[in-house]
Amino acid sequence: VITKEPTNAQLCIGEKLELNVTATGNDLTYQWRKNGNPINNANSNVFTIPSVSAQDSGIYDVIVRGSCSPSDTSIQVKVTIDQAPIITEQPKEQTVNEGSNVTFNVKVSNTARSYQWRKSGVDIPNANQPSYTLTNVKQNDEGNYDCLVTNKCGTTTSNRVKLTIIPKGDGPLLSLSQNSIEFGTVKINSKLEKTFPGLLKNIGSETLTITEINIIGDNPSDYEIFGVTLPMNLSVDEEKQLNIRFTPSEIGIRSAIIKFKGNFAQPPELQLSGIGGFIKISAQEKIIDFGNVGINNSSTKNALIINEGNAPAKLSQFTIAGEDITEFGFPLDIAEITLDAESEVELPLVFNPSSEGSKTAIFTITVDENEKISIQLIGNATTSLKDDYPFINHFSAFPNPAENRITFQFNSIIEGNFQIAIYNSLGIAIYHSTQFFKFGDNFFEWHLLDDSGNRSSSGTYYLHITNGVYSFVYKVVLY
Image (cartoon, rainbow, N blue to C red):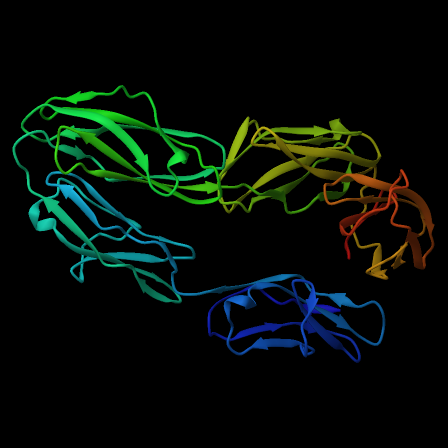
Protein backbone atom coordinates (compact mmCIF):
# COMPACT_ATOMS: atom_id res chain seq x y z
CA VAL A 1 0.00 0.00 0.00
CA ILE A 2 1.39 3.40 -0.99
CA THR A 3 1.64 5.66 2.06
CA LYS A 4 3.39 8.66 0.51
CA GLU A 5 2.76 9.71 -3.08
CA PRO A 6 5.25 11.37 -5.48
CA THR A 7 4.77 15.09 -6.10
CA ASN A 8 4.83 17.38 -9.13
CA ALA A 9 8.18 18.84 -10.15
CA GLN A 10 9.13 21.97 -12.09
CA LEU A 11 12.79 22.18 -13.07
CA CYS A 12 15.17 23.97 -15.41
CA ILE A 13 17.16 22.17 -18.07
CA GLY A 14 20.25 20.59 -16.50
CA GLU A 15 18.82 20.29 -12.99
CA LYS A 16 18.30 16.99 -11.15
CA LEU A 17 14.88 15.32 -11.06
CA GLU A 18 14.02 13.14 -8.06
CA LEU A 19 10.64 11.47 -7.57
CA ASN A 20 9.95 9.47 -4.39
CA VAL A 21 7.29 7.01 -3.31
CA THR A 22 6.86 5.30 0.06
CA ALA A 23 4.95 2.02 0.44
CA THR A 24 4.39 -0.72 3.01
CA GLY A 25 4.41 -4.47 2.37
CA ASN A 26 6.71 -7.42 1.81
CA ASP A 27 9.05 -8.03 -1.14
CA LEU A 28 8.16 -4.73 -2.79
CA THR A 29 9.11 -4.04 -6.41
CA TYR A 30 8.73 -0.79 -8.30
CA GLN A 31 8.17 0.17 -11.94
CA TRP A 32 8.20 3.85 -12.80
CA ARG A 33 6.36 4.95 -15.94
CA LYS A 34 6.34 8.05 -18.14
CA ASN A 35 3.13 8.82 -20.03
CA GLY A 36 1.98 5.27 -19.24
CA ASN A 37 5.11 3.57 -20.64
CA PRO A 38 7.56 1.65 -18.41
CA ILE A 39 10.96 3.32 -17.93
CA ASN A 40 13.94 1.01 -18.31
CA ASN A 41 15.86 0.32 -15.09
CA ALA A 42 13.52 2.53 -13.03
CA ASN A 43 12.87 -0.08 -10.33
CA SER A 44 13.52 1.70 -7.04
CA ASN A 45 11.29 3.73 -4.74
CA VAL A 46 13.34 6.75 -5.88
CA PHE A 47 13.51 7.72 -9.55
CA THR A 48 16.19 10.22 -10.60
CA ILE A 49 17.46 11.92 -13.74
CA PRO A 50 20.77 13.62 -12.95
CA SER A 51 20.45 16.31 -15.66
CA VAL A 52 17.04 16.82 -17.23
CA SER A 53 16.33 17.93 -20.80
CA ALA A 54 13.16 19.31 -22.40
CA GLN A 55 12.21 15.76 -23.48
CA ASP A 56 11.88 14.70 -19.84
CA SER A 57 8.66 16.69 -19.40
CA GLY A 58 5.64 14.41 -18.98
CA ILE A 59 3.30 12.52 -16.66
CA TYR A 60 4.95 10.06 -14.29
CA ASP A 61 3.64 7.37 -11.95
CA VAL A 62 4.90 4.17 -10.33
CA ILE A 63 3.42 0.67 -9.93
CA VAL A 64 4.27 -0.97 -6.59
CA ARG A 65 3.93 -4.75 -6.26
CA GLY A 66 4.39 -6.93 -3.23
CA SER A 67 4.15 -10.59 -2.26
CA CYS A 68 0.33 -10.28 -2.12
CA SER A 69 -2.06 -9.05 -4.81
CA PRO A 70 -3.18 -6.59 -5.93
CA SER A 71 -0.54 -4.08 -6.98
CA ASP A 72 -0.89 -0.40 -6.11
CA THR A 73 -0.39 2.49 -8.54
CA SER A 74 0.60 5.97 -7.40
CA ILE A 75 -1.11 9.17 -8.45
CA GLN A 76 0.09 10.70 -11.69
CA VAL A 77 2.45 13.65 -11.25
CA LYS A 78 3.43 16.27 -13.79
CA VAL A 79 7.09 17.00 -14.47
CA THR A 80 7.63 20.33 -16.22
CA ILE A 81 11.02 21.21 -17.67
CA ASP A 82 11.57 24.90 -18.38
CA GLN A 83 14.46 26.88 -19.78
CA ALA A 84 15.58 30.47 -20.19
CA PRO A 85 12.99 32.58 -22.07
CA ILE A 86 12.60 31.66 -25.74
CA ILE A 87 11.83 34.80 -27.74
CA THR A 88 9.34 34.05 -30.51
CA GLU A 89 8.70 37.62 -31.65
CA GLN A 90 11.57 40.09 -31.75
CA PRO A 91 11.21 43.89 -31.65
CA LYS A 92 11.35 45.50 -35.08
CA GLU A 93 13.43 48.38 -36.43
CA GLN A 94 11.26 51.43 -37.06
CA THR A 95 11.42 54.71 -38.92
CA VAL A 96 8.78 57.23 -37.85
CA ASN A 97 8.02 60.91 -38.14
CA GLU A 98 8.91 63.24 -35.30
CA GLY A 99 5.92 63.62 -32.99
CA SER A 100 4.64 60.09 -33.60
CA ASN A 101 4.18 57.34 -31.05
CA VAL A 102 6.34 54.20 -31.18
CA THR A 103 5.84 50.79 -29.57
CA PHE A 104 8.38 47.98 -29.34
CA ASN A 105 7.14 44.45 -28.54
CA VAL A 106 8.74 41.19 -27.50
CA LYS A 107 7.04 37.79 -27.01
CA VAL A 108 8.23 34.55 -25.45
CA SER A 109 6.91 31.00 -25.79
CA ASN A 110 7.59 29.99 -22.19
CA THR A 111 7.47 31.66 -18.80
CA ALA A 112 8.93 35.13 -18.25
CA ARG A 113 9.15 36.71 -14.80
CA SER A 114 10.56 40.10 -15.73
CA TYR A 115 11.32 42.41 -18.64
CA GLN A 116 13.83 45.27 -18.88
CA TRP A 117 13.99 47.50 -21.96
CA ARG A 118 17.24 49.27 -22.71
CA LYS A 119 18.43 52.08 -24.97
CA SER A 120 22.04 51.85 -26.09
CA GLY A 121 22.63 49.20 -23.39
CA VAL A 122 21.30 51.38 -20.53
CA ASP A 123 18.20 50.34 -18.54
CA ILE A 124 15.14 52.51 -19.21
CA PRO A 125 13.36 53.31 -15.90
CA ASN A 126 9.93 51.66 -15.47
CA ALA A 127 10.17 49.90 -18.86
CA ASN A 128 9.31 46.48 -17.44
CA GLN A 129 6.52 45.11 -19.65
CA PRO A 130 6.47 43.02 -22.87
CA SER A 131 5.70 46.27 -24.73
CA TYR A 132 7.52 49.60 -24.48
CA THR A 133 5.92 52.77 -25.90
CA LEU A 134 7.43 56.17 -26.64
CA THR A 135 4.94 59.01 -27.17
CA ASN A 136 5.51 62.17 -29.23
CA VAL A 137 9.03 61.08 -30.15
CA LYS A 138 11.82 63.64 -30.52
CA GLN A 139 15.21 63.51 -32.19
CA ASN A 140 16.92 62.50 -28.95
CA ASP A 141 14.75 59.32 -28.82
CA GLU A 142 16.63 57.99 -31.84
CA GLY A 143 18.91 55.05 -30.99
CA ASN A 144 19.21 51.30 -30.49
CA TYR A 145 16.73 49.42 -28.28
CA ASP A 146 16.62 45.88 -26.88
CA CYS A 147 14.95 43.95 -24.04
CA LEU A 148 16.24 41.57 -21.35
CA VAL A 149 13.72 38.81 -20.59
CA THR A 150 14.31 36.80 -17.42
CA ASN A 151 12.83 33.79 -15.65
CA LYS A 152 14.11 31.40 -12.98
CA CYS A 153 16.15 29.52 -15.60
CA GLY A 154 18.09 32.49 -16.99
CA THR A 155 18.02 35.68 -19.09
CA THR A 156 17.62 36.08 -22.86
CA THR A 157 18.42 39.31 -24.73
CA SER A 158 16.28 40.31 -27.70
CA ASN A 159 17.63 41.62 -30.97
CA ARG A 160 18.95 45.17 -30.82
CA VAL A 161 16.86 47.33 -33.19
CA LYS A 162 17.23 50.89 -34.38
CA LEU A 163 14.69 53.67 -34.05
CA THR A 164 15.09 56.40 -36.70
CA ILE A 165 13.28 59.74 -36.34
CA ILE A 166 12.40 61.79 -39.43
CA PRO A 167 12.45 65.54 -38.61
CA LYS A 168 9.33 67.61 -39.20
CA GLY A 169 9.21 69.58 -42.43
CA ASP A 170 6.81 71.65 -44.55
CA GLY A 171 3.72 70.13 -46.22
CA PRO A 172 1.34 67.38 -45.08
CA LEU A 173 2.79 64.77 -42.69
CA LEU A 174 0.96 61.63 -41.53
CA SER A 175 1.52 60.48 -37.96
CA LEU A 176 0.14 57.40 -36.18
CA SER A 177 -0.81 57.41 -32.50
CA GLN A 178 0.61 53.87 -32.37
CA ASN A 179 2.76 52.06 -34.86
CA SER A 180 1.75 48.50 -33.88
CA ILE A 181 -1.52 46.87 -32.93
CA GLU A 182 -1.86 43.61 -31.01
CA PHE A 183 -5.19 41.78 -31.37
CA GLY A 184 -4.38 39.05 -28.87
CA THR A 185 -5.64 35.50 -29.31
CA VAL A 186 -8.80 34.94 -31.35
CA LYS A 187 -10.29 31.55 -32.17
CA ILE A 188 -9.67 30.67 -35.82
CA ASN A 189 -12.42 31.75 -38.23
CA SER A 190 -13.89 34.04 -35.55
CA LYS A 191 -13.91 37.83 -36.00
CA LEU A 192 -12.57 40.54 -33.74
CA GLU A 193 -13.30 44.14 -34.78
CA LYS A 194 -11.49 47.08 -33.22
CA THR A 195 -11.84 50.84 -33.66
CA PHE A 196 -8.84 53.08 -33.01
CA PRO A 197 -9.94 56.68 -32.44
CA GLY A 198 -7.34 59.30 -33.36
CA LEU A 199 -5.01 56.72 -34.91
CA LEU A 200 -4.37 58.96 -37.93
CA LYS A 201 -3.19 62.56 -37.51
CA ASN A 202 -1.87 65.25 -39.83
CA ILE A 203 1.05 66.85 -37.99
CA GLY A 204 2.18 68.80 -41.10
CA SER A 205 1.49 72.30 -42.31
CA GLU A 206 -0.94 71.54 -45.18
CA THR A 207 -4.06 69.43 -45.79
CA LEU A 208 -3.25 65.72 -46.05
CA THR A 209 -5.00 63.28 -48.37
CA ILE A 210 -4.82 59.47 -48.02
CA THR A 211 -5.58 57.84 -51.36
CA GLU A 212 -4.74 54.19 -50.64
CA ILE A 213 -4.59 51.90 -47.60
CA ASN A 214 -3.02 48.53 -48.41
CA ILE A 215 -2.44 45.45 -46.26
CA ILE A 216 0.69 43.43 -47.04
CA GLY A 217 3.00 41.07 -45.16
CA ASP A 218 2.80 37.44 -44.05
CA ASN A 219 -0.96 37.08 -43.52
CA PRO A 220 -2.72 40.04 -45.19
CA SER A 221 -5.97 38.13 -45.83
CA ASP A 222 -6.52 37.75 -42.06
CA TYR A 223 -6.97 41.52 -41.68
CA GLU A 224 -9.45 43.95 -43.21
CA ILE A 225 -10.06 47.71 -43.08
CA PHE A 226 -13.78 48.52 -42.85
CA GLY A 227 -15.95 51.61 -42.59
CA VAL A 228 -13.42 53.85 -44.33
CA THR A 229 -14.06 55.99 -47.43
CA LEU A 230 -11.15 56.99 -49.65
CA PRO A 231 -9.78 59.43 -50.45
CA MET A 232 -9.62 60.63 -46.83
CA ASN A 233 -8.71 64.27 -46.10
CA LEU A 234 -7.18 65.52 -42.84
CA SER A 235 -6.70 69.21 -42.22
CA VAL A 236 -3.73 70.42 -40.15
CA ASP A 237 -3.77 68.78 -36.68
CA GLU A 238 -6.93 66.81 -37.54
CA GLU A 239 -7.30 63.24 -36.25
CA LYS A 240 -9.35 60.37 -37.66
CA GLN A 241 -10.10 56.80 -36.61
CA LEU A 242 -9.36 53.52 -38.35
CA ASN A 243 -11.43 50.31 -38.11
CA ILE A 244 -9.65 46.96 -38.44
CA ARG A 245 -11.11 43.45 -38.47
CA PHE A 246 -9.01 40.39 -37.52
CA THR A 247 -10.19 36.94 -38.68
CA PRO A 248 -7.40 34.37 -38.17
CA SER A 249 -7.50 31.55 -40.69
CA GLU A 250 -4.94 29.29 -39.01
CA ILE A 251 -3.54 28.55 -35.55
CA GLY A 252 -0.42 30.51 -34.61
CA ILE A 253 1.00 34.02 -35.01
CA ARG A 254 -0.68 36.01 -37.80
CA SER A 255 0.96 39.27 -38.85
CA ALA A 256 0.58 41.94 -41.52
CA ILE A 257 1.53 45.55 -42.31
CA ILE A 258 -0.72 48.46 -43.26
CA LYS A 259 0.79 50.91 -45.75
CA PHE A 260 -0.59 54.34 -46.59
CA LYS A 261 -0.30 56.32 -49.82
CA GLY A 262 -1.16 59.96 -50.45
CA ASN A 263 0.23 63.47 -50.92
CA PHE A 264 2.82 63.09 -48.14
CA ALA A 265 6.42 61.93 -47.89
CA GLN A 266 7.83 59.22 -45.57
CA PRO A 267 4.49 57.41 -44.97
CA PRO A 268 4.51 55.46 -41.67
CA GLU A 269 3.71 51.76 -41.48
CA LEU A 270 1.30 50.10 -39.05
CA GLN A 271 2.34 46.65 -37.79
CA LEU A 272 -0.53 44.20 -37.11
CA SER A 273 -0.16 41.09 -34.98
CA GLY A 274 -2.53 38.51 -33.59
CA ILE A 275 -2.72 34.83 -32.75
CA GLY A 276 -5.05 32.28 -34.28
CA GLY A 277 -6.26 30.33 -31.28
CA PHE A 278 -8.10 27.16 -30.33
CA ILE A 279 -10.08 26.04 -27.33
CA LYS A 280 -9.88 22.68 -25.59
CA ILE A 281 -12.45 22.36 -22.82
CA SER A 282 -12.68 19.34 -20.54
CA ALA A 283 -13.98 18.34 -17.14
CA GLN A 284 -11.41 16.98 -14.72
CA GLU A 285 -13.88 14.30 -13.62
CA LYS A 286 -16.42 12.72 -15.96
CA ILE A 287 -18.37 11.38 -12.98
CA ILE A 288 -19.10 13.19 -9.72
CA ASP A 289 -20.17 10.83 -6.93
CA PHE A 290 -21.87 12.57 -4.00
CA GLY A 291 -21.81 9.38 -1.93
CA ASN A 292 -24.46 8.91 0.72
CA VAL A 293 -26.73 11.82 1.60
CA GLY A 294 -29.72 11.76 3.92
CA ILE A 295 -33.13 12.55 2.49
CA ASN A 296 -33.83 16.31 2.59
CA ASN A 297 -30.17 16.96 3.34
CA SER A 298 -27.78 18.36 0.77
CA SER A 299 -24.20 17.89 -0.39
CA THR A 300 -22.18 20.20 -2.63
CA LYS A 301 -19.26 19.22 -4.86
CA ASN A 302 -17.36 21.22 -7.44
CA ALA A 303 -16.90 20.36 -11.10
CA LEU A 304 -13.49 21.55 -12.29
CA ILE A 305 -13.69 22.77 -15.91
CA ILE A 306 -10.35 23.28 -17.70
CA ASN A 307 -9.47 25.22 -20.84
CA GLU A 308 -6.21 23.78 -22.19
CA GLY A 309 -6.41 25.90 -25.35
CA ASN A 310 -4.79 29.25 -26.11
CA ALA A 311 -8.05 31.14 -26.75
CA PRO A 312 -10.82 32.13 -24.32
CA ALA A 313 -14.04 30.10 -24.38
CA LYS A 314 -17.61 31.01 -23.53
CA LEU A 315 -19.45 28.58 -21.26
CA SER A 316 -23.24 28.82 -21.22
CA GLN A 317 -26.51 26.85 -20.99
CA PHE A 318 -25.72 25.07 -17.73
CA THR A 319 -28.39 22.34 -17.61
CA ILE A 320 -29.19 19.24 -15.59
CA ALA A 321 -31.15 16.46 -17.27
CA GLY A 322 -31.83 12.77 -16.80
CA GLU A 323 -33.77 10.40 -14.68
CA ASP A 324 -33.49 12.28 -11.36
CA ILE A 325 -33.29 15.88 -12.55
CA THR A 326 -35.06 17.27 -9.45
CA GLU A 327 -32.54 15.69 -7.06
CA PHE A 328 -29.56 17.70 -8.35
CA GLY A 329 -29.00 21.41 -8.83
CA PHE A 330 -26.66 24.08 -10.19
CA PRO A 331 -26.98 26.97 -7.71
CA LEU A 332 -25.28 29.77 -9.67
CA ASP A 333 -27.60 32.30 -11.32
CA ILE A 334 -25.41 33.05 -14.34
CA ALA A 335 -26.03 33.01 -18.09
CA GLU A 336 -22.44 32.51 -19.20
CA ILE A 337 -18.80 32.42 -18.08
CA THR A 338 -15.73 33.40 -20.08
CA LEU A 339 -12.97 30.88 -19.38
CA ASP A 340 -9.60 32.37 -20.30
CA ALA A 341 -6.89 30.44 -22.10
CA GLU A 342 -5.00 27.89 -20.00
CA SER A 343 -7.24 28.48 -16.99
CA GLU A 344 -9.86 26.63 -14.98
CA VAL A 345 -13.06 27.30 -13.07
CA GLU A 346 -14.90 25.40 -10.32
CA LEU A 347 -18.67 25.08 -10.75
CA PRO A 348 -20.71 24.01 -7.70
CA LEU A 349 -23.24 21.19 -8.00
CA VAL A 350 -25.74 20.20 -5.31
CA PHE A 351 -27.33 16.86 -4.45
CA ASN A 352 -30.52 17.31 -2.39
CA PRO A 353 -32.45 14.02 -2.47
CA SER A 354 -36.14 13.82 -1.63
CA SER A 355 -36.59 10.04 -1.78
CA GLU A 356 -34.53 6.98 -0.96
CA GLY A 357 -32.33 5.16 -3.45
CA SER A 358 -29.62 5.63 -6.03
CA LYS A 359 -29.96 8.84 -8.09
CA THR A 360 -28.38 9.87 -11.40
CA ALA A 361 -28.46 12.88 -13.72
CA ILE A 362 -26.25 14.57 -16.32
CA PHE A 363 -24.83 18.10 -16.00
CA THR A 364 -24.23 19.64 -19.43
CA ILE A 365 -22.32 22.79 -20.42
CA THR A 366 -22.40 24.42 -23.86
CA VAL A 367 -19.03 25.66 -25.13
CA ASP A 368 -18.99 28.57 -27.62
CA GLU A 369 -22.62 27.85 -28.53
CA ASN A 370 -21.94 24.60 -30.40
CA GLU A 371 -19.85 22.08 -28.43
CA LYS A 372 -21.11 20.35 -25.29
CA ILE A 373 -19.41 18.61 -22.38
CA SER A 374 -21.26 16.38 -19.92
CA ILE A 375 -20.65 15.16 -16.39
CA GLN A 376 -22.48 12.20 -14.88
CA LEU A 377 -23.91 12.94 -11.41
CA ILE A 378 -24.38 10.08 -8.97
CA GLY A 379 -25.66 10.01 -5.42
CA ASN A 380 -27.31 7.70 -2.90
CA ALA A 381 -30.19 8.87 -0.73
CA THR A 382 -30.79 7.08 2.55
CA THR A 383 -33.28 7.52 5.38
CA SER A 384 -30.67 6.77 8.06
CA LEU A 385 -27.37 8.05 6.79
CA LYS A 386 -24.51 5.71 7.57
CA ASP A 387 -20.91 6.77 7.75
CA ASP A 388 -19.42 6.64 4.26
CA TYR A 389 -16.62 4.11 4.25
CA PRO A 390 -14.81 2.03 1.62
CA PHE A 391 -16.97 -1.12 1.52
CA ILE A 392 -14.84 -2.37 -1.41
CA ASN A 393 -11.08 -2.74 -1.21
CA HIS A 394 -8.18 -4.63 -2.80
CA PHE A 395 -9.65 -3.81 -6.19
CA SER A 396 -7.90 -4.91 -9.39
CA ALA A 397 -8.73 -5.27 -13.09
CA PHE A 398 -7.08 -7.76 -15.44
CA PRO A 399 -5.96 -8.55 -18.07
CA ASN A 400 -5.16 -5.15 -19.58
CA PRO A 401 -4.86 -4.98 -22.57
CA ALA A 402 -7.91 -7.22 -22.83
CA GLU A 403 -9.06 -9.03 -25.96
CA ASN A 404 -12.57 -10.28 -25.16
CA ARG A 405 -13.24 -9.55 -21.50
CA ILE A 406 -11.84 -7.88 -18.41
CA THR A 407 -12.20 -9.26 -14.88
CA PHE A 408 -12.80 -7.03 -11.87
CA GLN A 409 -11.67 -8.62 -8.60
CA PHE A 410 -12.16 -7.11 -5.15
CA ASN A 411 -12.99 -7.71 -1.50
CA SER A 412 -16.36 -6.58 -0.11
CA ILE A 413 -17.05 -6.03 3.58
CA ILE A 414 -20.84 -6.19 3.06
CA GLU A 415 -22.99 -8.56 1.01
CA GLY A 416 -26.17 -8.24 -1.03
CA ASN A 417 -27.39 -7.21 -4.47
CA PHE A 418 -25.46 -4.43 -6.17
CA GLN A 419 -26.21 -2.38 -9.25
CA ILE A 420 -23.28 -2.03 -11.65
CA ALA A 421 -22.91 0.65 -14.32
CA ILE A 422 -19.98 1.40 -16.62
CA TYR A 423 -19.63 4.93 -18.01
CA ASN A 424 -17.54 6.06 -20.96
CA SER A 425 -15.26 9.12 -20.95
CA LEU A 426 -18.24 11.36 -21.84
CA GLY A 427 -20.03 10.33 -18.64
CA ILE A 428 -22.64 8.25 -20.51
CA ALA A 429 -23.68 4.93 -18.98
CA ILE A 430 -23.07 2.21 -21.60
CA TYR A 431 -23.47 -0.98 -19.54
CA HIS A 432 -25.74 -2.04 -16.69
CA SER A 433 -25.88 -5.19 -14.57
CA THR A 434 -27.03 -6.48 -11.18
CA GLN A 435 -24.80 -8.84 -9.18
CA PHE A 436 -24.88 -10.50 -5.79
CA PHE A 437 -21.66 -9.92 -3.85
CA LYS A 438 -20.80 -11.98 -0.82
CA PHE A 439 -18.73 -10.97 2.15
CA GLY A 440 -15.07 -11.43 1.18
CA ASP A 441 -13.56 -11.98 -2.26
CA ASN A 442 -15.70 -11.36 -5.34
CA PHE A 443 -15.25 -10.93 -9.05
CA PHE A 444 -17.31 -10.29 -12.16
CA GLU A 445 -16.48 -10.14 -15.85
CA TRP A 446 -17.29 -7.50 -18.42
CA HIS A 447 -17.13 -8.76 -21.97
CA LEU A 448 -16.32 -5.25 -23.29
CA LEU A 449 -19.80 -4.89 -24.79
CA ASP A 450 -22.31 -2.11 -24.18
CA ASP A 451 -26.00 -2.70 -23.50
CA SER A 452 -26.63 -2.91 -27.27
CA GLY A 453 -23.92 -5.51 -27.83
CA ASN A 454 -21.43 -3.13 -29.43
CA ARG A 455 -17.71 -3.67 -28.76
CA SER A 456 -16.15 -0.99 -26.56
CA SER A 457 -12.88 0.52 -27.78
CA SER A 458 -9.79 1.34 -25.77
CA GLY A 459 -9.99 4.46 -23.60
CA THR A 460 -11.06 5.65 -20.15
CA TYR A 461 -14.08 4.12 -18.40
CA TYR A 462 -15.62 4.47 -14.94
CA LEU A 463 -17.10 1.53 -13.01
CA HIS A 464 -19.85 2.45 -10.54
CA ILE A 465 -21.05 -0.09 -7.92
CA THR A 466 -23.86 0.74 -5.48
CA ASN A 467 -26.41 -0.99 -3.28
CA GLY A 468 -28.46 2.19 -2.84
CA VAL A 469 -26.69 3.02 0.41
CA TYR A 470 -22.99 2.78 -0.35
CA SER A 471 -21.25 3.70 -3.54
CA PHE A 472 -17.91 2.88 -5.20
CA VAL A 473 -16.33 4.36 -8.36
CA TYR A 474 -13.25 2.95 -10.07
CA LYS A 475 -11.46 4.46 -13.06
CA VAL A 476 -9.98 2.04 -15.56
CA VAL A 477 -8.03 2.81 -18.73
CA LEU A 478 -8.36 0.06 -21.35
CA TYR A 479 -5.36 -0.30 -23.64
